View 1 (cartoon, rainbow over the protein chains, first blue to last red):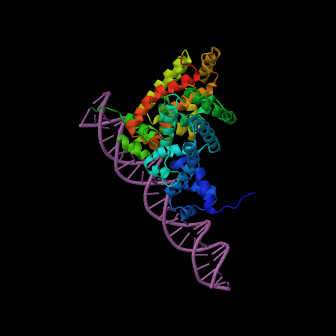
View 2: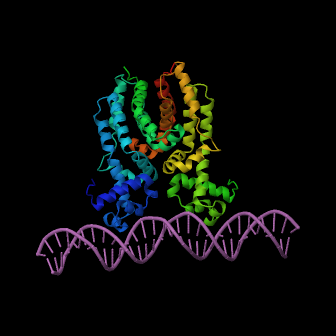
View 3: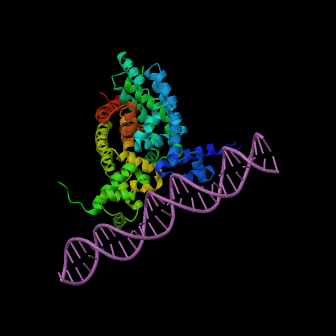
Length: 205
Length: 205
DNA sequence: ACTCGAATTAACCAAATGGTTAAACCATAA
DNA sequence: TTATGGTTTAACCATTTGGTTAATTCGAGT
């Protein structure tokens, strides 16, 4: 059954699809209108310009995954819990929205300053890097993990999880995987990342 | 002193700069012409179209780093040597050409099929994933490293090295780093990646 | 000095693209 | 029934953009 949807909602959905696939520079207002099944003028009636519409989509994209991740960094009692929780929930979310990460990263790369505010202000708030920093240092002092720069560890966690989604087509070429094979690979990857990090940090006892 | 450069060379240099910064969709032929200090018609005189020019730049970009990496994967006698050599030469190259990785990955993501051939044929040849596969299995059988899927290990190596370059602006925001701080972070990262991988693989003896 | 072909440019063109306008449509309240 | 106000559209506009043309400049060979 088809759910009733207002024109505005259909526009948002269409814009999201087009922007995530083509990026700001590659997206076309006409494409969005066609996809939403409405006249192009209606786009400008609801959202004044391409930039305005893009900003809304970008904010929505950021909000759709940052908050849940951030809460983990605030609440996790120890590194082991944080790593497990992060890897699992982050990769699950990425599997469900595979275009999200490449989109956000690409747009930030091409317009860092103007999109910065968007990521900090009202919505998600700034990333709680301090909380993570303190947790890591606490664990080091307790002798639970080896000495490591928290920034390096954060980058490990992010890079290991994100890279397969940023470079999926490239990896499919190199590995000669089809989509099912790649998805299986992603499924196995969660435990592998957790294993890699915990063994190297001396958490495996 | 200014080195004499033919118009064609200046065009290539300008095109490289513009394409790497803005991507195919965001690049403008007029920008390239201005940057090269020549008339726009001359672009089409030397290179027929934007697509043709783009393809040349893309191929040049791929060729400027794939070959040296590939040779490592062919010649390394053991995993330990491969990891050290790869991380060091790969990250050095990325530091020197920070736009390269985001550019290639983004363009492949947006046109996988048509750029595929480019990456395999004449130039670099396909990535030697088999050689890597065999090396890893040999080391596992020799008991030198723990059991691990070679594809996962490959992804670890790539992701750990590449991610800071793909997400640099994002990370600068989260870490609140300026450029010197981030570069210092990158400098320390080489040894940290090597440490992470070797400890987790039981190579630290 | 002159010729000839390659290099270079100003001017131009057609299509694409973001955006606007004025009219038409349509539900609802008086 | 008919105002009324929000919604939707066809037609249009100005600018941008990739690409072309025809003329001009320039340098090497005669």
